[in-house]
Length: 243
Image 1 (cartoon, rainbow, N blue to C red):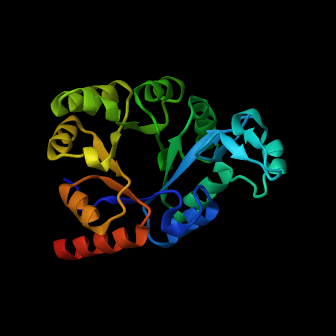
Image 2: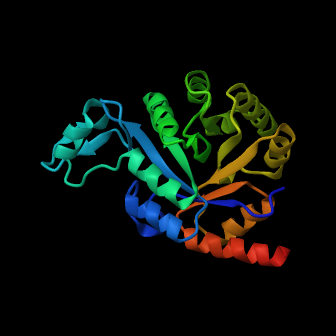
Image 3: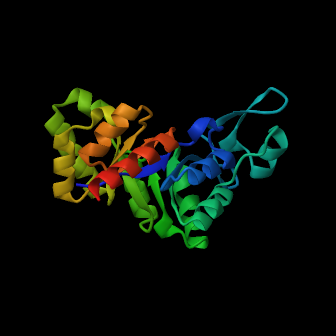
């Protein structure tokens, strides 16, 4: 069991804009171990920080990020979109790690190439990967570490034990190092079975102090939160109590 969890700063942490350089800088300044951002890719293959493919342009019209080049995108937007390369430079300089929440299969290879170019394969990992995307990443970019995103519908359609077993099998077949879980699905049985199989448990998104303390005490490996400062304080208290 982990003594204390790694702290993952959710994009838009501490009331900053989602997928912004300010969010990254704020997460780092407040003591996060990992920075999480959403990743998409432009028509010319540039990974950028964005949750949605649809973007509202400065003239009020809607565009599709995946159908525009980076130049067309930035000419059309009122605020330039953040390239993943910019974000990775910030994270690399801090000595921390980045969680890349992929929003499309097309992101896998450009992200892999960029991580290799910046010598950051060991400092990034993928999330946003249910079983099919995780397997695609394994085959096309085996050097990228990744979490398996839990299929929540599996837990609704099966018994908890059956859903856990299938999740662990999927994580193993896709070469994942851990499992990314909505925190409400976490029970001790999942943690026990994951530990036996050698998988880490990362949970999202926990913003209330009571729940931070509960799940940190259960021994999850990482908690994603928007309230980074609160979780950092709780982590310091846990470390002091354990010393």
